Length: 261
Image (cartoon, rainbow, N blue to C red; front, top):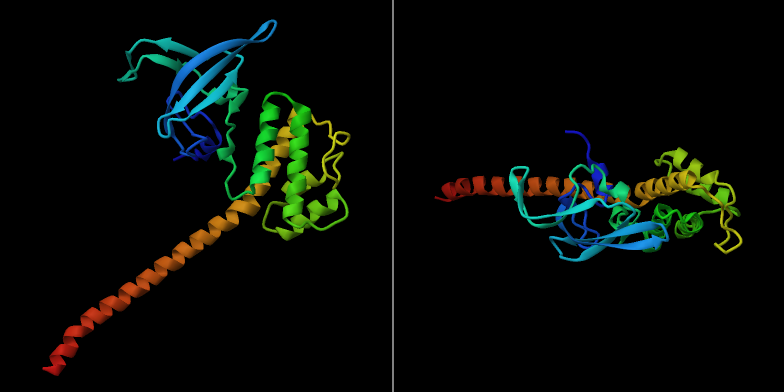
């Protein structure tokens, strides 16, 4: 079976199921409850899609510059009956690519084992990038990296030295990930302020965001998963050991009774 784990990083899987950012359930059914439109500018329209989770019944909002939905009466489709109401067009293979902003944002992509302050900054950076707010995205990702160096007690007097310190601290993480962060231009170890926002374009920002997410997964999530797997195996071995002890005790009991007779 092909690896489809990439679907966990999407909002919408297809026209019927999505990853709910409220109850954090993967591959859960949703209903496109309503569609509205407004004027984004003098000559551009924006479409608003309201989606209700079939599990927790909370509603999320999604903005697009395209009309990617329709409305129908109850009809037979794909071997089943689809209810009347709004629906995303069947021919759209990647709904996420048509959406430029969602609320709440897809924070469920970042594991909860990553510090909240960093998760929020990365999520904000991704949201800004989707709306082409490059200054905001640059500021957020820069601050997220800074917070990581603080949380991890990275050593060094400047930014590059701190990233190299993290590289040494986590030798099992791909060193190229840290090298990518270490060579960012216009980064300092100072806190973000209005005169120090780096001027990054969308391509470089995407690289930085994905690099930081990969590092966060490596140092915050994988160690805990490995620990849990190890504990699970130890528990299995312990249970098997106890089972043997009980079996031997049960088998030996009749022998001792017989000898007493």
